[in-house]
Structure formats: C-alpha cells, structure tokens
Image (cartoon, rainbow, N blue to C red; front, side, top):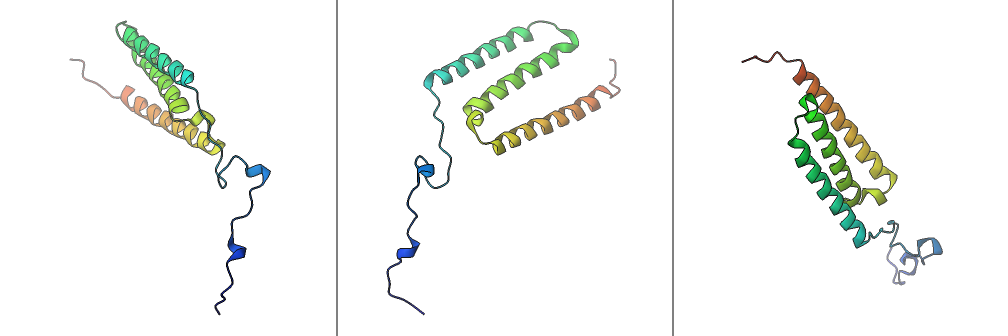
Length: 122
C-alpha cells in the first residue's frame, strides 16, 4: 500500500552534543603540526646518516643486527607519524603490532634456516 505522505519519519536525527564535532559516527581526525613533520623528517635523515656510517664499520657478525635495528626504528617512525597510527584507534594499533609480531616470526624462521645450512667453505 502506497501513501502520499512526506517521508518525515526518515529524516536524519538532530545532532546531539556528543556528535558535535563528528560527521556521522566517524572519529575526529587529528591534525599534526608542520613542526612535527619536520622533526620526523630530521629524525629519518639522521638515522639514514647513521645507517651509512655504521655500514662502513666492520662489526663482524653484528652488522646485520645493527642494520636491522636501525631499519626497524625508521620503519616504526614512518608507521607512527606518516601513516598516522600514533593517533589511531586501538584496533589499528592491534593490527600494526600483530603485523610486526608476524614479521618477527618470519625473520626468526628465516635466520634459523639460514644459520643452520652447511655452506661450502670455498
């Protein structure tokens, strides 16, 4: 059965005080300052210089560990600030941490396999 009444009941509800700064149910976006981006950029540049400097030093078996540590620090900085995870909800944090844990498992399995192979001496 069709009615000719206007669809008054289907209008959007009035905004309440708790939704004053949100559109719908989306969380408010955090805006980072330009200074924070320059600080992050400077940090990444310093870590890049440290990476090049450390690559020229013979650390023996620690070369890979030091290079991976610096790379993980740089990746963490990029993920937290440039991908805005630092201001994200908890679910995003859980996904990022789970991804890093999975990457760690893969590295452990890779290096365990790599270190136990019988490589030829010559």
